[in-house]
Length: 312
Image (tube, one colour):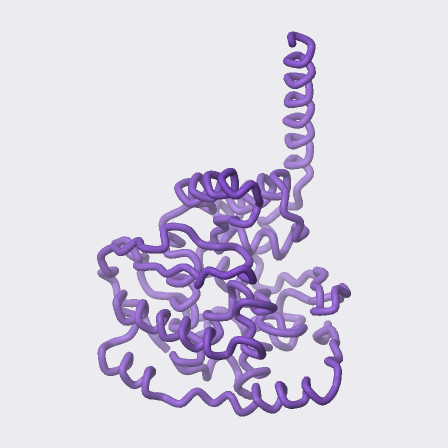
């Protein structure tokens, strides 16, 4: 027994040493603060093939923060990371709940990632689900919070999120689904795109589950009203507005008649005003086997924020 304990102790020491070396070799994040910064990452299409993807102004679909509607930013924050303006890159309570859930289910399904962590993963890390990758993700997220503004982080996040088959970033997503630049998105369209984020390939894929995406977008609009992003009149107008998904329907029809062809994007904002002063109301994705990373504290309800974000 003593030998087993000794071996386990040595294994833990070796792993911690490996983690320490790995973290010391992580790429610098300070250069992300430069508005002219561009880099190339690898993204995967829906057939499992990797393609180069340019992050930054050299990508023609890149949308600077000032051209992303405040409603788009708040739709994502309220749905994905309600404590975004309070944490320093990671949410300790969410991580504890995720660990408890994963231990109970004997899986690594619940990630509890903040927007900053997801941005760090998208820019620097692989998609593997492991303790090592999660530790790297947390470390990079903490460093990003020290070097970048919240506005810069959300700008990167919205420009690299996956929104469809080889559709990455809000600029490409807006044109793909609605035929317009991101700056022209309506609150209803912002909520629709935000609703897809938990699983655009499966659970919240509008090609397969359009009704599910629309229901979640309604919930996000309600959150935006509860937290002062939308006034009563704006909320009612958004609910009553017809979502123009003609472009989506044409793509669905085409996908039925022919196999999809994927191509890599060419490699050639206004910030939400004021940091929230109260706990933001949040929702979690609908549960289901296809869901990717489930959120925690599904039923949390707190007071609306006091500061109303500036809108376009």
